[in-house]
Image (cartoon, rainbow, N blue to C red; front, top):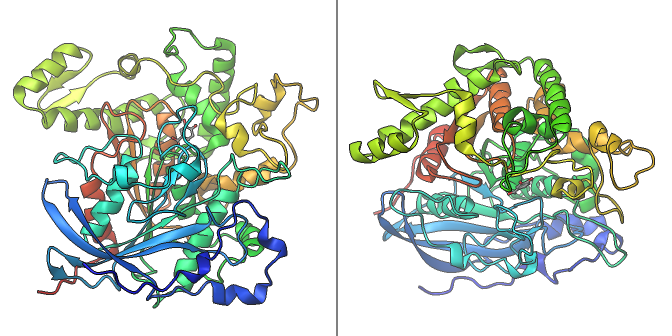
Length: 534
Ligand code: DHB
């Protein structure tokens, strides 16, 4: 396979590492800088194994990092890569009107970069889109996904950290879709003046700027810009759902203007979110409602006074949401949410899992897990037994707004030269770091709105949100409460949106065990029919 056109990617020019570019560029250059060059690709070939275990040879056009704003703060992160299939298994494909999978690789609210990516699946955050190991490699050294480019196994199971997004991207390409992978600034980025320039709302502003870039290049960029489907895992899932919920919301305008974002819509068609770590200002209460009775992996019990106080706050919040459960469950509140979680999500999840096992494997599983009653092809159990089954909770209390400001989310709400701040009244009141005011800073409420999909679905219902939602979460994921995704799904359902929400039985954080179904779902909701030549 030859190299296609090799015109340089003009917009990426010199990558500014942490320069503040807002002073140097005039806005008149913005429109030129943001024109996608259809000829500036390299032709690549990739072998992709689908979820049935069949290998496909995909020839695709690859556009390396393109800066998606005219006045980048840091082009290392504010760039995207594009992959568009031209031939699959020897047959020509026309992806000019195919859905666009907009797959972010953000994890931990950390920076994600595609600046040095050389192929599809080339995005990477400092933590690879999954659980946050301390001492994770820095973003600049983790941009290549060649190592994770192996396709999912025959069972489609890809629950490894970072596997979710990577397999979505590869499977999408093999299905004939265009794959666009945006980088975005993240919470740890600091300039030479010691200022944090990637904290809230930087990541969502960047993703929106990427969408505006894509939409403003309609007809030049491959794919149907009216059929953008976002995908992300964990913090990336949170940002994906926020992107879906907040389409064209004016509250981001001033931030987008500062970056010289393209003048176009940032609304997207559909949203995929795996284990979204979202609704952060209510997540501490939700966490205690869910995992409050569980001990830490050290065997230590968390502070019960704090846990109970937070649980009380959650009950109030949950009542205020006035949600109705899916499946005709009726009004949800903190007293019936356990029954709802069991009936709507957990038992069906266990049932699917057990039904797929061989008789002997099922027998073995049930012998080891006697809390499950298996009758008439259905699993039943209590919420209390389920909690015992999951075991150790991952986080201490409060899980997100730590009294000592040690949580990643405290950093996400940092600003200026301040590394970390409280973002809940309760966290600030109980601050252990010497915060004299014991209050959240005055800019925090607006930042929380900018970061929370629920704001766009509850407080200010956004008509330009995406109307198709794919939400997934492992039942053993205690990175946040299992109710966060369930509440998001219930609210979307109550608004009339199309919601496909399942829990993966016994899977942990970052699981994506049905990526093939996600790819089929994209075709279904977008009405896409593959156009193949002979
Ligand atoms: C992620 C995990 C967390 O536990 C969290 O609080 C935020 C983000 C992640 O994997 O992206």
